[in-house]
Amino acid sequence: MKKQLLYEGKAKQVYTTDQSDLLVLSYKNEATAFNGKKKASFNGKGRYNNLISAYLFTYLADHGVPSHFKQTLSDTEQLVQQTTIIPLEVVVRNLATGSIVKRLGIEEKTVFDPPLIEFYFKEDALDDPIINDQHALLLTDATVEELDQIKSYALKVNHVLQSFFDTIEVKLVDFKLEFGRDRLGEIVLADEISPDTCRLWDKTTEAKLDKDVFRQGTGDLITVYDTILKRLEAVK
Ligand code: TMP
Image 1 (cartoon, rainbow, N blue to C red):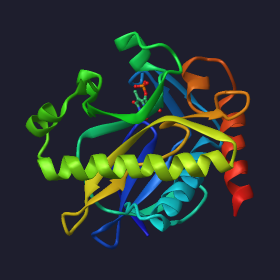
Image 2 (tube, helix red, strand yellow):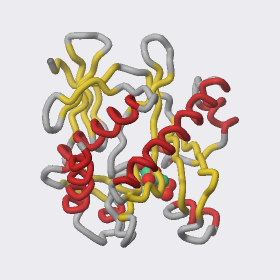
Image 3 (cartoon, rainbow, N blue to C red):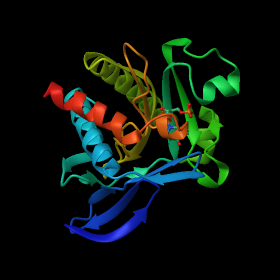
Image 4 (cartoon, rainbow, N blue to C red):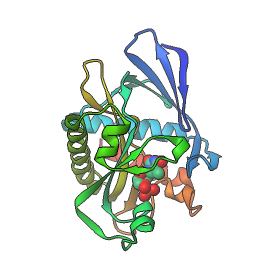
């Protein structure tokens, strides 16, 4: 199935397949933070992200949000539809924490209702700066209609996943999405949704169950990723 390594990112490798519109994503064990300045490898991390992302994309597809995800191939690999990635990181926030607290001086845990949507320009050389819609129109080939579609999907993902995580006793604090265009030019969700790209807090204790334990050096990444996967699997 896998043919040639097409691209290697910080957390995944992308391979071509014998079908031109299908790619294999292979999840690595590496964790990075602060644009790659902090790095470590965790046995089993690739498996957690692969299985958690597959679960969430399947759940979202069942609830009306299309994505590039096709099927799980192995513990660390999944088959996806090829898309042209729009170089935007789309962040949705329900509670204030992380960069917004530092940037704007908003008090930690302030509730955002309606949720906040932010765009960041996906460009490592610039450290992924925050941008507005007009910058997004200037810096990418996305149209006004596509940005509207992206924002609408982002809010829908938030709505669907917030209710879902609530059932497994997890607060969806914030998360990052990426979108691409499929062969027909339609906007679809791409990349991954996992504890690497979300802030997930235990509903009762507010213990962090995501990559912040590695970013901040406050806990064991594998233990908390395992908690999330076990809670997801208990739903089936
Ligand atoms: P932030 O508070 O650091 O801006 O992060 C907001 C959300 O986006 C959080 O859930 C973590 C996620 N995120 C990524 O997935 N990739 C990144 O490069 C960054 C900076 C944040």
